[in-house]
Image (tube, rainbow, N blue to C red; front, side, top):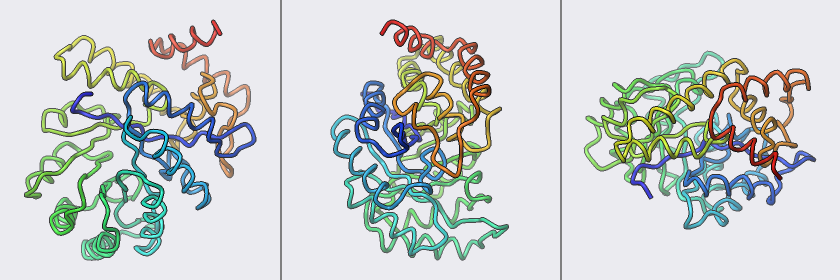
Length: 313
């Protein structure tokens, strides 16, 4: 396997009756295993983590950790919480389930609240002092409503040695450069692919991640494989396909879960009958038909191949 990893910010696939079905979930995970794509589970966005019960979150983590052991990495991406104690409770659910790494966001910024640097420091220290387990800190302005300073993240990483990774969403590559200069120990850095930026690979990251891997995981893996093999043409083909899907799905936002579940339904991927968990709703049949036509018109090879294989069954 490549020394560069690719992770899927995974959806939570539901059965036709809206439940977390182990059979459907394992079918979904088989696609990630086949493509050698790791998974971040239970996130509040793509994973609809806030719509899952505590028992369901435990089941999702435990089932994936057992099924994927030794095949692909399984990480828990905790649904963001308002307090350190609530985050620690979420982390404990994941740890008891057997995941390899727990990912947590910095302090919430909802309702116009913008935490001070001192408050973010105190929050991270409280959580990381209680959660003594391999951990990743996720920096995500689009989720939190603000960008914590690189100084805050670096201080947490220097003090708490079980923080193994920093995961970066929607930040410039200069943030990564600044952060790496402030942390004086070996760390892993994960960078969001859909920012459309090649520079993080040049700066030095250990993994990319993308919601698009839910739909075209082999294309995601091909991008990194071609990069490492020096196959510029192959890398560009994969890059273009990923960007096409990302840009197309922008029309169906907000919320990454909605267009992902629409793509899954259009392609009849595992969990296609389950759709979204209330209070969110799948679109009408007319809108789904419009989405599906546009999706197939993109000409993405992995989607074309899947549709052809499905038609032959």
